[in-house]
Image 1 (tube, rainbow, N blue to C red):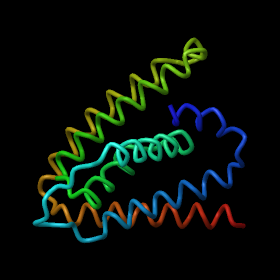
Image 2: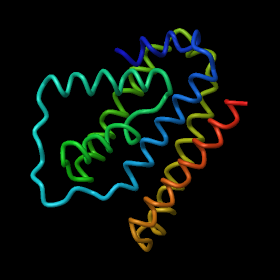
Image 3: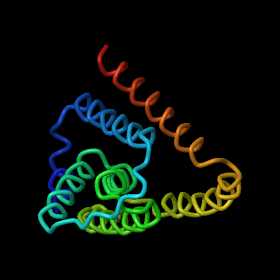
Length: 166
């Protein structure tokens, strides 16, 4: 619900603030990818309060910036709760699905304005691209993929902050 609430007020926040905030989230995600993984520690059980707080924070950031799941849930689960990468990714996909469904329902009033061929084309292209790149990814060391993506995020965030500051 916080993603709907923040999604409704985001239009009243200056674009510059949104872009700088988004860039800071990108830098945080990049840091989490460059940091050494925690190994040989048991998975921590998340208390109900931690789960509620984490959900509210992720929902708020999703509503403000339109991001969530992989950028927020996976690093938090892996770094702070010692969750395995695969389990964190599965949890992230569930979060993304629920966020998308919530956002879709919240925008029901404008469904007739949507050209539904665009989401369909994007979905089909994403499936084909994922199939092709998964073959490449399997031959590339994971550490190189993480470092490359982290550097891309840092470059994008730096560029965005620089262009918004001038």
